[in-house]
Length: 365
Image (cartoon, rainbow, N blue to C red):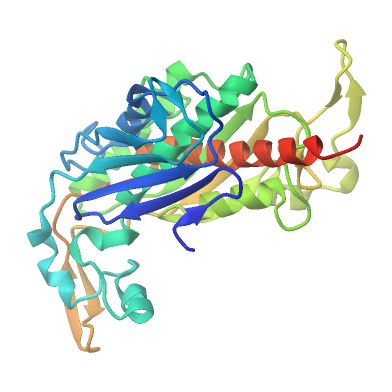
């Protein structure tokens, strides 16, 4: 079904933007994992609206409630249900959208698919749906951290429109990323990005950009050739997020400008006996399977479709009209997309780790 994700670590999500609540059911979490609501709330706070002056000002606490699957601070191995209540709905801001389609939104396509739609806030197509992904991802992250001491997933804003962050030679630092409201690894670029976002917001417009993600401490062997290659599942996870328009891993499209000799990652044996690669143009995945190097990929996010300027459109009956959006919207989705990208990485890797455990447990080798 369209609202389920994963094979052995599987989530089901539910809820609309202006409905009573949003949430998820997580199935396949191993028993005995230490878990409480604070583990999940920390990540939801990074995603929630109203956290800074450059994001939507919708006032939601996004407090999570674990309703099943946990007893005395430990997971039971049974389904974990998590609910977040909606509190600050302003459905009257969407009255005009009952008949007029918002440009580049899902209004028209949802009408064509289902014959009706939840108008307020975009219903199920709203980015508010990602609350469930972040909540489930927080659990997946705890599973991975319990197995791999060096595991770390760090996403950050790489570009906003034409402004690009410089990645430090020593690697990205989570403290630096969280020290600025745009969530980038470069404090100098951060100021320029914030200035641009505030400028376009004042003009009633929006901007997009790229989120880059570095994942460290991933073991070798994760990925299921042929159709469930690790990069394929990561790509599906990222492109299932609202406003995404592109995915590339490792050298990405830039690799097409190299020769094979230039692009190949040569192997060597490190001092601790590990087989490593001299370079990492593969982005940590070869043949669809993790090779133990850092997994590095980028996700392109389009400018927010909702802009506070009048645009041409049509009504549900096909009549030409104009529409000027109202309500509270992100002028740039990137700062709040960072924890969502990380959550989807946790979900993919946790699922593939469980699949690898099942495969090797049944192997005579």
